Image (cartoon, rainbow, N blue to C red; front, side):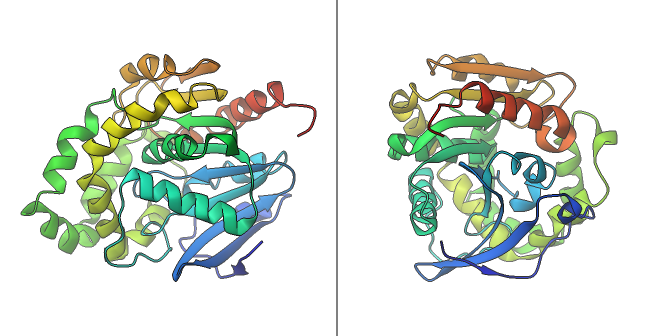
Length: 301
């Protein structure tokens, strides 16, 4: 398995490395692109995929607990967090999924459980559709899906040729806007832990973060249509849906429609929680994931 250790970027203000399971902070070069990722634990592989403007920092309360049962990988997708973002990178769902599979290949991961949140949930579903035989289970957290209309108009606005250059130029400087956006993702802002705002702001000083976001938004609606068309390919994969009932980013009303696309599926709706349940209610989130996996563990795993 490839990868070299690097120093931590974007400190959370919470030293998760004080937990019993050490977390490695690593880099790997894939086709000329430097990826940052974290790895912890042992056992079956669980791959974590962050959302838009998220990165491996998003999983700081989940990795120490999940690493008790898994070898956990948390990637910074190219353009997000502290991974590189070459000019001209195609940020639509299918190429993004193919890059994630390339990461798995390089790490020697033939199969794994796949957990994705928000836009990363859409990436997870598309990745599973591209290579369904490589994924044992899916855990989708407030996932972007074809039945939530929240991003459909915003994607058109922010990827507009007039608006996008402004977004790219001034986005890193709009700290008050960044703060407002993050606060809206919580069902109860009092649950935001110290260091959260600073951790998310760290990579937003890079223009690459906003170039990546514009690339994602540019193909948003096309991607959702394609995602809907490929969902039958993954309907057989055991799936856990976790949603906050106060999510204002991916509407909870879309959850039953997404649930109906799977044969073996459970929907857990967390009361009073917003778009980031792994941060806002980490104990309940981690317990739900571990229970789901334990119930469906096969003898050979």
